[in-house]
Length: 212
Image (cartoon, rainbow, N blue to C red):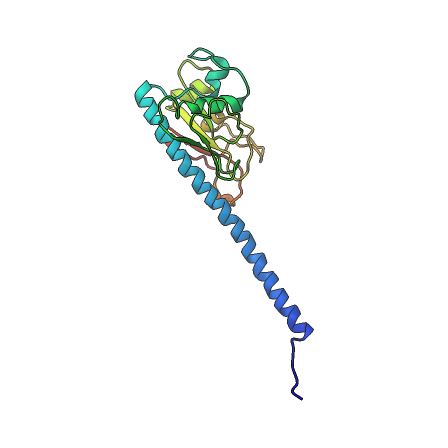
């Protein structure tokens, strides 16, 4: 009778250990690749929105009004009241209706899995997932005026891998950095680790960076 040899328990344990080691190496790299892909997508979408904002500004001589405009009525009538999420959508709706500078408004990839808000449905749609948008003007107060005086007319914000919303875009642009490690008043920098504090910002001057 022929003898059939199988794997010993030691051999099986060695194979399992090798697979576990490879998985421990591969999984973090896979997760980092996902983060890097979202960062790239966020930057690309903000470039597209920036193009639409500049096209709007060419037609109307000013960028679309931002959330602070709509909250305080600074420089323009106060047509809307409500939460920031509604105001963000209303502000960015200027890019899709009545003139379609964009057909859809991309959503922050770190808040959403890739959908977009369709043209025509933006005005009445409350969604926390849109990129934060702010415009600046001379007649605004505080840090908003300071931003305008150093050349900023608008800014877009992606929350980035840290996914922290709290803070003010104007503070970040002015370099108001605190000692709080969770403060968002710094720019996202992958050299500090794929998931590092800070926002991804784009302004009328291009992509914004601040030394960590």
